[in-house]
Length: 152
Image: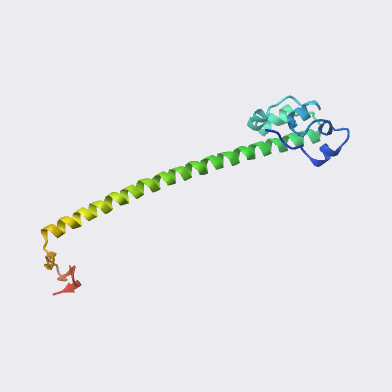
């Protein structure tokens, strides 16, 4: 993947290597021309700040700043990629959950229909269902399915 030039000043300067190279070249190769140890983008992103500081000891401050900025940009790209991957995986899991839940709702709806058909078979139309009675308690109230809560 090609990277844009490091800073507007480096690409506009007639003496900078960036102005003589094509826009598709990587920044690390531009910086290597200036005496920086060769680092791939992956190596640069994996280096700790302490390790990078040791490698860049004695280099021009501008080069150090540009490499540190490039490292931060590469790390941010990695974080963004991981975020996108997690979001896609999460979306796929949620879609799979939706399919499973829809199947479960369909199965439960079918079971309910079958139970209602059985109830109709065993209970002739027009006959009210028997009222379940709860054991008598101190309050002597119970729930009547046809009338709601009642007390005796």
